[in-house]
Structure formats: structure tokens, C-alpha cells
Length: 324
Image 1 (tube, rainbow, N blue to C red):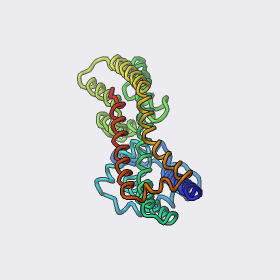
Image 2 (cartoon, rainbow, N blue to C red):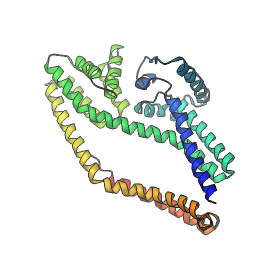
Image 3 (cartoon, rainbow, N blue to C red):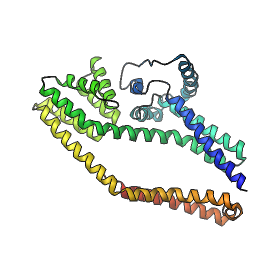
Image 4 (cartoon, helix red, strand yellow):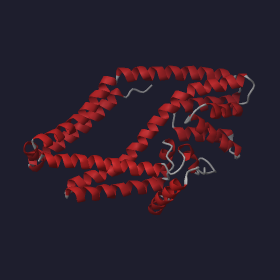
């Protein structure tokens, strides 16, 4: 019936929205710019966000739930590895808390699917979606933050080189970047300066910043700076040359992105079109499409189609992914 298909579609959208809202509340437990300072491996201090009374109450409630469930996963290797991913995404959650959040969303999704649809398949699908969405969001935040950071490196190097020519020291040039530029590069340089002020060696603080960000361009810059500190030379000129190289790389990436737009669009169509077509047929003529899910041969065809979809998307992504 069209009504049933409509209810299924709307219920799925409602579940996705509720999941995103829950995750958004958990993510906004503290200031966005202070997320990196929560990790003890990268900083010895913790930021105290300035939030209102109601926000503090929500923070205590949701953080208490996540902390209580997260204690089960504390000390595990996977949870510790998640902290680096969360730091790169600038999300102020511990690895154990993120694992607890993912499991809670899996259970909520599975229960939601069973209560609404009374179907084990929908329950499994919604449970999988509940556990997948937080990880997808973390990867999205990492990619967006890294792209913004890379776009700021060239300007930061120009500021540093000009500061060095004006007579400032290297640390003063870093402080100039942290004060004059916008996040995320300003917050990263500020965190590195904070580590140095607490007694951490300059080389250690710079390598920690490379680990936090995960940028190849920043790694190139820090490598050049460390070599210059050992053998000497004109650091301002070195930074100018690196800035020019990074600008050319960014320009080349934009050109490649333009040339591969058609391939990426083809991958998007391949992934979305079958799902849209199934939903449309369910709404227009459910009897016509329902046999595909009831007959054994139909189920086999669905499995083969899903495998083909995944293989096609991976191949297209491999073709359009050109390293620069």
C-alpha cells in the first residue's frame, strides 16, 4: 500500500534526524575550539568551557550517561585509537564515550525498527545505521577540517616568514599565526605554544601537532623547520618556498577535482538511483516490487545487486582518487 511505504520512508527520516540531534547534543558538551585539549596525550591542561546554566545541566546529564557506559571500554586499544580520530575531527569526546554513544544508537535504532515495523530486517538495518552515522560524521568532520587547515597553511607560512624578516623569533612567529588567523590553524598553533610553555621541547610539540592534524603539507613544513633548526639557514626563505609549493599543490588539486567531477557524479548516481527507484516502486505499485523481496531468486538478485553496487562505487572512487 502507498500509505505503508510513506510511513516507512517518513519513519526512517525521523530516526535519522533524531540520531543526528542526539549526537549533536553530545558533541556540543564543550567549546568546539577546546576539543583537542581534552586529550592527555597532546596537552596537560583541560579547557573549562563557558556555557550557560541550562547547557551545563544538559552537559552533566548526557556526559554522565556516556561516562557511565564508557567505563566499560576504558583502557581498550580501540577506544584509545578513537581519541586521535576525535581530536582530528575537533570533537570533545573520549574514545570510550564515543564507543558508548555508538552502541546506544545501535540499540535505539534496532528497538525503533522492531517497535515500528515489527520486522527483523528493518531492525537490523536501522541498528546498523545508528552505529554507522557517528563514524560517518567523524570522517566528514576530519575531512572538512583537514581541507580548511590545508587551505590556511600557505597564508600562515607567509605570516611567519614576514615575522622572521621583521626580527621576530620562530616562537613569536608561531604566536602571530595563533593570534592573527582563524581556526583550525590558529587553535593548533595555540595548542603547540601551550605545550611549549608547559616545558615540552619544541620538536616534540611540533611533531604532536603533526599527529593531531594529519596533514601532509604540515608534515612537510615541520620537517623543513626541524632540519633548519639542526643545520641552520634562512628559515624565512625556506618558508616562502614551501608556501609557493603548497599553493601550486592546492591549485592542482582544484583542477583535478574539476576534471573528475563527472566521475564522482556517476558514482553518486550509481549509489542513489537504485534506492530511489525501489522507494518509488513501493509507493506506486508495491505488489510489483514485493515479490523481489519474497521469492528466493529475488533475494539472491538483491544480494548480487548490492555487491555490484559496492564494487562499482569502490572502483569509481579508486579511479577518481588521484594523489597529488
